Amino acid sequence: MAFITTDVNHLGESIAIEDAQNYIFGLVLFNDWSARDIQGWEYAPLGPFLGKSFASTISPWIVTLDALKPFKVESPKQEPKPLPYLKQSGKKSYDIHLQAFIQPENKEETLVSHSNFKYMYWTMVQKLTHHTSNGCNVRAGDMMGSGTISGPTKDSYGSMLELTWRGQNPIKLKDGSERKFINDGDTVIMKDYCENNEVRIGFGDCTGKVLPALE
Image 1: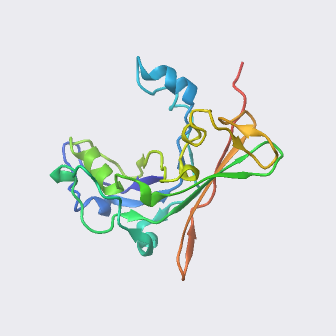
Image 2 (image 1 turned 30 degrees about the vertical axis):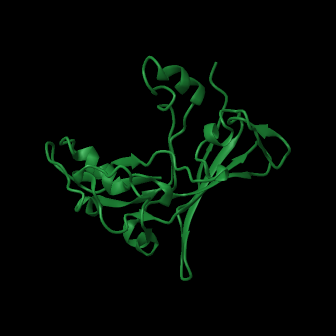
């Protein structure tokens, strides 16, 4: 997931956690594509760089926090306790169901992960507060990603690296093929929704196809 900001602060100002939610316009579904083989190679000398910088995909529209109010939930208990400037009160997370599918070229899609935004350890308001704590200015329309959203069960892990346990446990797709990681020609489809007895809210599909590298 990712959140979109409103006009937030001037350079040198910080945003108090009590006010941070007022500066978040809404949410989109977000796939920050990762090339884990490159990322693994980069870790020791540089940290992740080229393994994370080559592609991003988002869903087609922004769902506002007003629309998501009925789906607010408590976030996970934080131990050790955050520093005072990051302490929050009340419901600051959201019950958003997340699904990820792999679709081989000209084949049927297979559900490979089913997680939930409520599993995120750090909330959006904490992230925005921390981001501005050193006076960094945030502008209207900036987008901030949540990071990988993994749940407590094996089928709720948020990346192929986790789902296949570094490739040791391949995933079997509906067409009989197996995946340790994403192959050329595969389409990754991410979907999410909120639902209660009165309404269902979707974000639109977040879809991208992996093409062969240029030679």
